[in-house]
Image 1 (cartoon, rainbow over the protein chains, first blue to last red):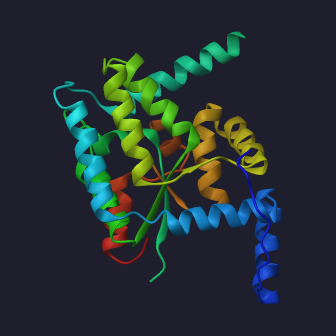
Image 2: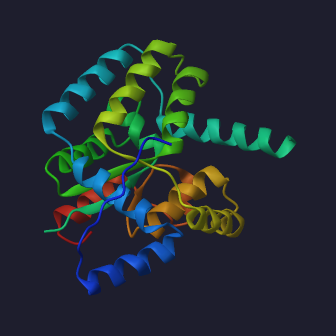
Length: 87
Length: 147
């Protein structure tokens, strides 16, 4: 696990109760819940970063030819599922 | 207006990068635009990275390791990848059994349900089980203001 530091935060009781209901329902700890929420908040995309990432990804796949991704993924999942069942 | 949470199936993620021979590319990419505008909060599963890489390298797409790695790296910069919780995997097992899905399919549906998110997919099994929506359907509903 990455190095982690304990922090003390102040929170209204009603919000904390909602968080606890949610973590119970997800089977997560409070720490896991906060980490995910913060990562998501910080993870809002910078549109320029997204555009640059899309350009790179699209350029990489240019000329790959014609296929329908739903068919490719379906075939890959069924193949994997069949291998899992044989184990 | 709060953003709509959307979990994207791997088959939609590939359409963000590849268009030749693909259905519903425009709708799949409209979701990306909404994500950039923060009206949609897109996410994928940790599993998606492997599915996208495998589909590109081992499926009939025939991509090289470098092409797949570039797409995987780009995906990490676009939206977060969720690791399903133990409870979500329990729910996924139940969905897999009830709808005769692979656990891979069911994991997407369980995470979306567990987090009050929409699942966008073009996977026939998930659509038939009414566990996900086509991107065109979701984008159309968003435009009408009734997601």
